[in-house]
Image 1 (tube, helix red, strand yellow):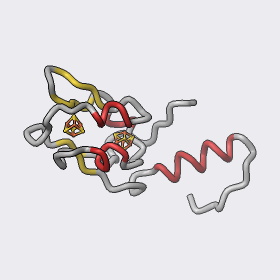
Image 2: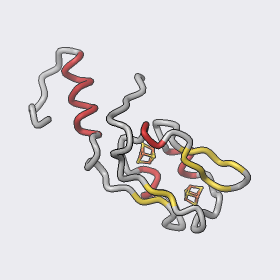
Image 3: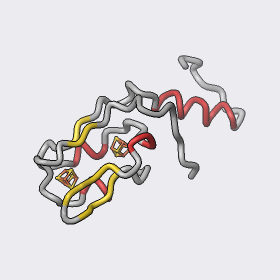
Length: 93
Ligand code: SF4
Ligand code: SF4
């Protein structure tokens, strides 16, 4: 699957490193490779690749991750991707 990106610096994704317990779940569920474990803690290695799907925050046991799903542009990215393949979309973006 292609790696989708939107405008830099617009994602609502935030990581509270002090709350992270290093379980690694976020690195497992993220489809974009945004997070990585380094020295036992999660770090954002490619924040602008976040498509605000919300999977990391949903699975984080300590509340270290927050994101507002869809506000940034997951919908825009998906719509663009579908339009590029000649698929009809709702035209909301
Ligand atoms: S919101 Fe989705 S794309 Fe963004 S960091 Fe979390 S799992 Fe990855
Ligand atoms: S899921 Fe939460 S607690 Fe686990 S490594 Fe990621 S940020 Fe840290």
